[in-house]
Length: 188
Image 1 (spheres, rainbow, N blue to C red):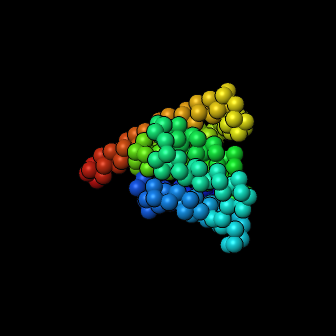
Image 2: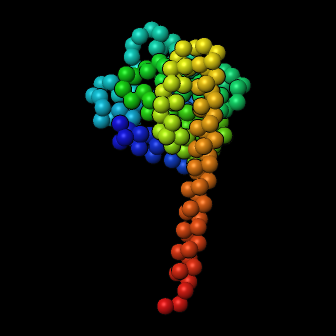
Image 3: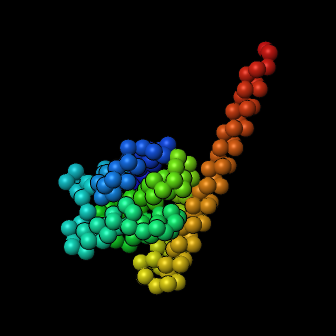
């Protein structure tokens, strides 16, 4: 599963990738691509990128595609949370659905301009708070007002924490880079 998560992350690296463009035009194709990346070593080729054939799965994926391509005017963090929660709840592929759901959350934040370069790393928060993440996902799946609220709050906290984590990474790289420059400039 780690290899699949790394492949998905690589496909989103840098923000405005080909996958982001596909997401904006044809989100169901982007979902299929995400699943193919996420589950390449977990299932056979026949099942890669193909959601389960249940009528409900297809209908809900079509509704999600409609929503993310302009069927709503909710703020990007809410849309990212709803798309993420819906894919976790639906588990449309039966393998690597969590990796796909988290990838879609990133796609929404990139495509909406909330995180256009995909620098935030909300996955760090979700990993560190894995018990809360699973509980909030169950709350989302319940459809109750409290469950939905808990999921939205957790998702927004993850985006915030992911942005802070990205800033810390950038600061560490910048300070390391300036130290290297100073050391490189020193006469031998």
